[in-house]
Image 1: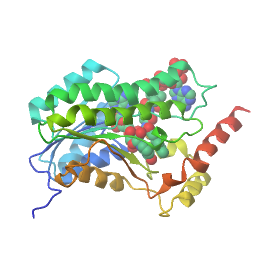
Image 2 (image 1 turned 120 degrees about the horizontal axis):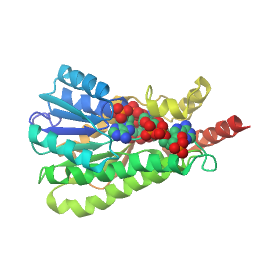
Image 3 (image 1 turned 90 degrees about the vertical axis):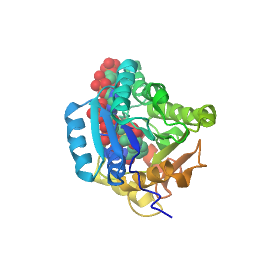
Length: 272
Ligand code: HXC
Ligand code: NAP
């Protein structure tokens, strides 16, 4: 049996792949020999990531700056990736925005902003990539969050948007399976040294509380999520479709627990 995690000759596209978890996913595919393309809003982050992808061993690396809220820009960017790298074997959709805010306090535009990045961004990525997916064989991975299935105070916008993302995963698993395309969601747990983690648990005390809540006793690492993505994109996962799978050390078996309540309490205290 050859190496089932060898991605030489495969094209991998990671949207929102220029920092944190998604960048770790892109780098993991680069180390596995794939040709890798990334996109996000910041040209500087794109350029830096492309350099690192090449250094990590990508057969080819490229990147473009665009905003997932702009449907045409997404479609054009994906077409550019396709003309350079060919059909997409793996598509990771991970661009997201988050900030803690109580519903009564946030503006309608604040709520809409997160829905437009996380949910409509996913729609634009799926529709833009559809013509370029390898048939049969493409594996799509949406990067979701526990907010998709657990309510957290101060996260109504993210909960609504990510729940939508997972329902897109589950619906497209039905619609696109006849064409040989699989799609699954990955749900990162509490991943150390990431923007998402910093925004929700910004103090040492909060971080300590989160760590004590995790059954496996440690925060997640970017590689914990990247490993799951390599598996889902590999032939070993050839019959896994429409699933929402966590890499979280068991954390979310406890529900949103103290973290969700802590965010709400911090926001209410700041208001007073
Ligand atoms: C209340 C806020 C706010 C805050 C912004 N807004 N921050 N409202 N509290 N902290 C409001 C603004 O006032 C504005 O509404 C509207 O949101 C849009 O804000 P902009 O700054 O104009 O938006 P934009 O420049 O497009 O930036 C989007 C963003 C930003 C989401 C606000 O934070 C961003 O770019 N984030 C990307 C990085 C990120 O969030 N990474 C973490 C992902 S983690 P008004 O009404 O004033 O116009 C994740 C899940 C983690 O997704 C789960 C961990 C367990
Ligand atoms: P991050 O470092 O902020 O990553 C977000 C990425 O998306 C960046 O590359 C960012 O780059 C890009 N992006 C944001 N808005 C965009 C837009 N409008 N258009 C195009 N690209 C955009 O955050 P992270 O914490 O690693 O989170 C990554 C993913 O994991 C997200 O989907 C998040 O919901 C999920 N998640 C994270 C955690 C955690 O513990 N961190 C837990 C659960 C789920 P630019 O700024 O250049 O656009």
